[in-house]
Image 1 (spheres, rainbow, N blue to C red):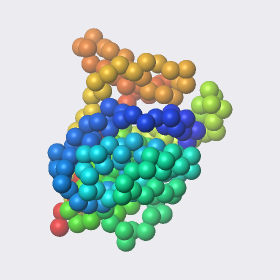
Image 2: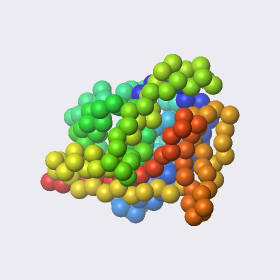
Image 3: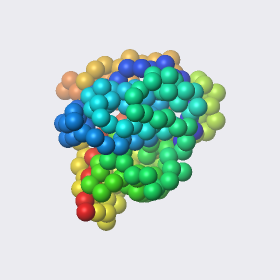
Image 4: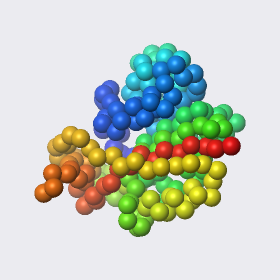
Length: 230
């Protein structure tokens, strides 16, 4: 998951709006006394895991990211019962299982979503939960995108792929899982930045906010919550 957009995460130590909602989903489902293992794929500076630890004090945390700089910053937070690894999660040994796996914005980097999604499911314990956050299309269209951000002089890269809810559902119906999609409606206004790949909001006539970027892409964000069943 190589990206030229790491600077958008490097100095961020505050929860994003979708992370606040995700934290509520997890704490409401598992409670503050939950004792289990939690994996955050693409953990960046460890902001989410730090917030989880404050809510669920007996949790044991692992964060993985492909950026050495982000992992160094995550380790500097000195979060109790945590470990952070510079590693591609696809290379994690599947003998290690987790009660909760979190993956935000990960599927968008893969031209074949079945590969990362199968890997995520393989890392779950029996009855474990997977929380995927990303762009999913409510219409039955899948898109594969390659872009070159001339503002940062990047090479051609991925990270804006989107799969339809129907496509993902067909895949999951063949698995021993229960799943649901929950739409994320961003509650705040995001200003347009100089870097054109960074998302911002526009308010339309019905006062709803739409999320887009200057790659001419409008995005629908969803939480995909998957529960393994025996």
